[in-house]
Image 1 (cartoon, one colour):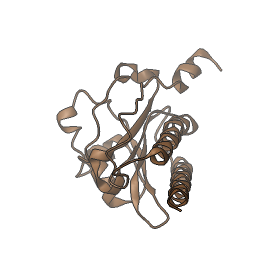
Image 2: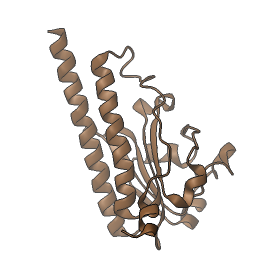
Image 3: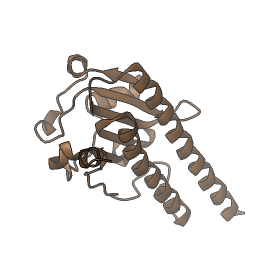
Length: 199
């Protein structure tokens, strides 16, 4: 791997967990809940870095929003060296603009930057304009459970070369499904352990 490839693939963002709660479905977390949260955090952290490198983009983000409660958001970023000045950007998403729209839309989207900015829900980052990392195109997919519940979103922006393609979208959606299935499996294990502990 060349030095250029290394800095392109390397995540420069300083991810940090800001707490296990609040969470509408784990109001009084015990040790089992904490272990589930730690495992879920690892999945999210690894997934966001892996998909950025696999598709080839400078930005990726994943967010889990439990029962559409944005106060419970758990979000991870991966940024290439191109966006190093945003390595410590920490303002949480609030469901404003296209973020909130994607959860309602509940379908994958692939847009050029022109298409994104022409979208009626594009707000230009609102009060975060000039602070939030700029975007160049958008590939996003909901994190959907087997029952159709939308638990969050996975997104990419600024492809290394050109625009996101139909093939990129196909692979991206498959990856989002894999992340969803992994999180659901962890949740099922958590529930089994909780039931066993009550027995």
